[in-house]
Image (tube, rainbow, N blue to C red; front, side, top):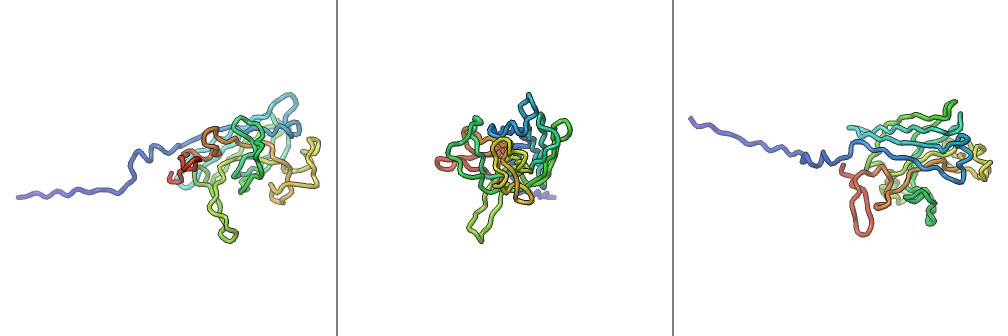
Length: 207
């Protein structure tokens, strides 16, 4: 009796592609020096660490901050552009934050700490677009938070009569802390898979 054997080929991505996807990243937010004294606990420099874990349907972002003034309200956004350079210095060529997504409210506790978590699409593929205004898919690879109350930054020279749109009422204060671009790629930290395209870098969205 002859025995027939069939070979089955499964059209699955190579294991190497799965292995290459970064599963967790950690990065710090840098304080804006111009308004530092308006949110820093006396005698301390605020610290904010962001941990992002890749998920199947969405990702988890955990933000932990310390040494802020107690009982201050902030608003967390993912944004297209940072106004700081990779070394934390102001970017002299900065014009605007670009596309911005409102992600969460933040509130420091009585000790000046923050600990929040959000779930959404974050790593490599976070984007927005609007064909009606000619806006193509645009990534928001940076993370930052803004003063919710403009008056909280008035002592640092911010004009409360000219608020920024970074809260639910579109009457927020200035940015308090923000992520830094990568020194080589100039991309925000939510891009884990930069690839060179011409003279610049873009993010590999096939993660």
